[in-house]
Amino acid sequence: MELTKLTRQMYLDGDITHEEYYAQFVTERELSVVKDIDINASLKTWDTLPDICLASQGLMIAVNESYTLSTKVCIYKTAKRKLLKIQGD
Image (cartoon, rainbow, N blue to C red; front, side):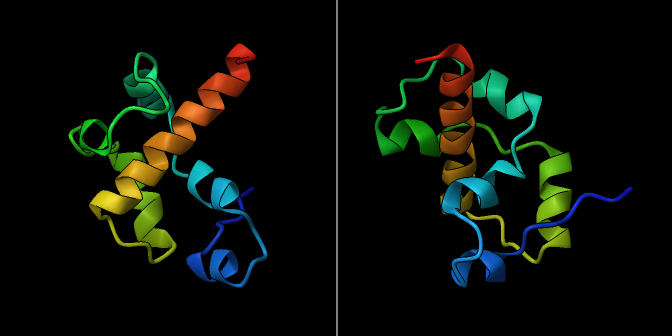
């Protein structure tokens, strides 16, 4: 069974939220990268994190998403919010 790919157009049309769209690119690797970063860290901190994993980049290609610094930060911040929810913070 193939997972439904959430497209950027679905996000832009308001069919899905920012969180739903970027959550599809979050893997265990992104969760581990952000575990010790404060959600309110400076933009420079988020910008200098390593590139997201290749699996996420492959999905980005499949949904015609560009890999930019902005996209990377959105994915990592979504990963951090997900981690905070798991931890109950």
